Image (tube, rainbow, N blue to C red; front, side, top):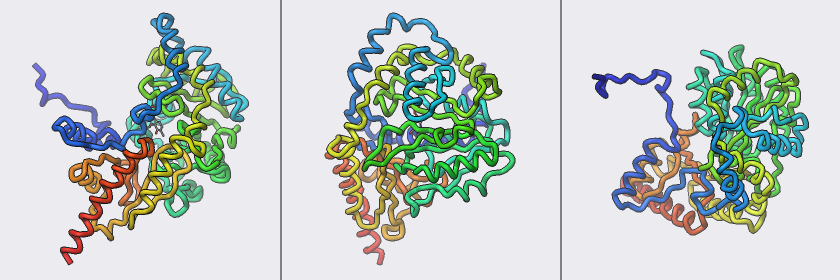
Amino acid sequence: MTRHADIRTSPKLSGISYSLRGPLAAQAERMRAAGKDVLALNLGDPAAYGLPTDPEVVRAVRDNLDRACGYSAAQGLPAAREAVARHYRAKGLGTVRPRDVYLGNGVSELAALSLHALLGPGDEILVPAPDYPMWTASAVLAGGSPVHYRCDEASAWFPDPADIARRTTDRTRALLVINPNNPTGAVWPPEILDALAEVARRHGLVLLADEIYADFLYDGTPHTPLATRAPDVPCLTFGGLSKRGRIPGYRVGWLALTGCPARDNALTSALDTLVSLRLCPSVPAQHAVEAALRADDTTALTAPGGELRRRRDHLCRLLDDLPGVRTVKPHGAFYAFPGIDRGRYRLGDDASLADELLCEVGLLVVPGSGLGPVPSGHLRVVTLPPTEILTEAVTRLTRFLDRRTRASAGCG
Ligand code: PLP
């Protein structure tokens, strides 16, 4: 009989972690179960913070449940793909047709499939640092090697195209852009996107554009889809309804392929094989797509006076008032990525900082070190909760830092 201790797991998993739902989140769960008060600001789930979807979207799913029992086409329902193609054509991606669109159980599934399609052993993919860690982990699981390029806090968390070009080798296959960015909230402007597209063009790379936050923009900041700046470069643009539709639990995402003029190419046939292996995405959830793309209700949340805009402003104001804490104002998405002056507060690395914040004041945030190689002292905090929760979170952070100040004064 096989005993637990005899089960060997795949070496592919060594070094793989997902800081957003890792040991710290598990510890928070245990603390909650033990009756402790924990404030969780670690997950980018709009529904969890009382930002519900349009009822029409839920109705579209409910009304189609009887018709959603069988498998759909592997690429997804034609009507849903048509809605995504229309959405991107309206954004300037003129060539997108339903056949260029693949639906999936969230961007997460399609990211993994795409990386399996693109990367062989030792192949490299350029990934922003900090990044949304699903990408780094999925690249490793696909057998590739993520190579992180630096986004600089001093330059509003924009990347330096020259740094990216320097890290490009003859093993590099793809360049990932997350824009608007998780965790920094930076929205990269067209000049930067042009320079990145040029790196891809020069080195024959495939562009991957994770634009799941494209609808969450503040202060009049425009979003430029990367594919519009590189119509001649193969580009996979990722989006979905976890953020825009505020239905992450339904698991709906898509990718749109541009820059590959003929349908008959190696990339599409790899994607076709991989999506057919998973049979199809959840069919009930696909019925949300048309309705959610019709409902253009995120602007009302992010415009002046909108609920998300108020929450972001509130959190940034509170963080700016904390001595020794600096935050580049996020112009997109729904995260802030403050840096704390470790010397001033005599803090350890940010993993222990996040751990101590949870244990000492019941505040769950994501340490910057869980988001790739970033200068120490950063934390990712969601801007989604109502203002009173954000106030309580910063009150706890303040209490924690005050204690550190007193302790270091006591030590002389
Ligand atoms: N990409 C980014 C940048 C994200 O922040 C997230 C989730 O937070 C995802 C992808 C995952 O999206 P999905 O729920 O569609 O799998």
